[in-house]
Amino acid sequence: MKRCLSLLEKRIPQGWKQLQPSKHDNIVVAMSSGVDSSIAAAIYSSFPNVRGVYMRNWSNKQNDTKNCDEKDWNDAKKVAKYLNIPIEMVNFEKEYWLDVFEPMLNNYELGLTPNPDILCNRYIKFGTLKQKLDEMYGVDNYWLVTGHYSRILQECRTGQFELLRGIDSSKDQSYYLSQVKPDIMDRTILPIGNFYKREIRQLAKELQLPTADKPDSQGICFVNNSQRGKFKTFLKEYLPSKPGHIITIDPQSGHKKVWGEHGGLWSYTIGQKVGIPMPQGDPEYRGTWFVSDKLRDTNEIMIVRGRDNPKLFRDHVKIIDMKWLFPEEDLMNIEKTLQEGIQRGDLFLQYRSLQEPILVDKYELWKSDQATNDKNQYINQRKNQRKNLEFILTLSCPQRAMAPGQYGCLYLKNRVIGSGTIIL
Ligand SMILES: Nc1ncnc2c1ncn2[C@@H]1O[C@H](COP(=O)(O)OP(=O)(O)OP(=O)(O)O)[C@@H](O)[C@H]1O
Image 1: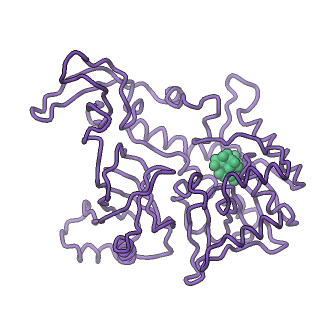
Image 2: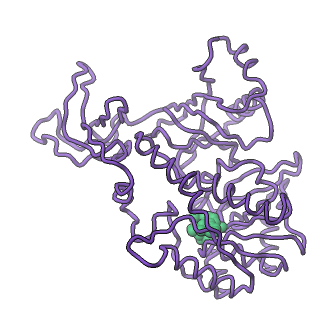
């Protein structure tokens, strides 16, 4: 694995540094049993004070005597044994339920589109786990290593740690990490972001790791493989049915027409094709219909005709509750960073993982919660505040089916600067 470390070293771009542990440092590898975190563990397995940690975030014993993650835990133990490193399980089911699962359910109920993977990284992997490790080893007395396809590197010029995309753009997970707290950055190592997935698979085969051929897990970590593609059925077990109307509103007359029923605002996603019969003989209604809006006040879902209906597209987006990956900075500095990014043409937005980044043309502070219309006065009010900055971004290209509740993540080129919640 020395080969891996030296290859990693060669791939660090000029002007950047990847800090590495000294020989006797404490190193904790978050091992999910997947091939990526197995290789991350293999890379550091020759260090004397390395150990694996497996998080049990979810169990499902209702119909079964075994936990649904039993196989993953056994695989993680097999890999640790093979690499000759200790491993332990930590149980974060309660924390996961409270910080990730319940907020997700609440948001779905409100008709929003939440992202539990982002919450899991913020509150569990780099929240509860970090707290536990702080208690075990002492703050800053250990390195946390994960198998994410992303990089945390130190910029030589500024000495700051930055979250960067992984080099394999088809696997990049930086979007999912965009809400982690900046204080994790200087002690976290993401070695896998310096490799391509095919290289990781190849390495796992060469090393004959027990999980070399294990298929990649996808998406939400608590929905197990047998439930993939049936997420709505899964949600139904936890969310009350709240039937409402599926409607059209005539843009000219404003006349509302009811076409069917939905089981709750959460049961459809913005942009999704609706499976209700529309009168195909009538030229006004012939064709395929898609969800364009969820009306929370009236519990109605609005539909429009055609996948490319202009009502499904937006060239601007409103973002609130930004979490920045900047060190302590005030609004002026944030504004300066955004402005310079726009001038250079390298400020991008993503509202989904693995999406083609969208060039941002313009930003505007959104002055919803203060009396003044004077921008300078507003800036003075907000000076030294980093929280709750709200703004509207104008995008270079209209986007289809952006949905409230999604996270909007801002990048300067390939560096994450923060993310917030889209409210449209
Ligand atoms: N249950 C878990 N226990 C410990 N670490 C985990 C767990 N789930 C995820 N992680 C850590 O977070 C990283 C990214 O999570 P993700 O869900 O993408 O991983 P995965 O696809 O399950 O497995 P892998 O990335 O190891 O192939 C993992 O590489 C691992 O370091």
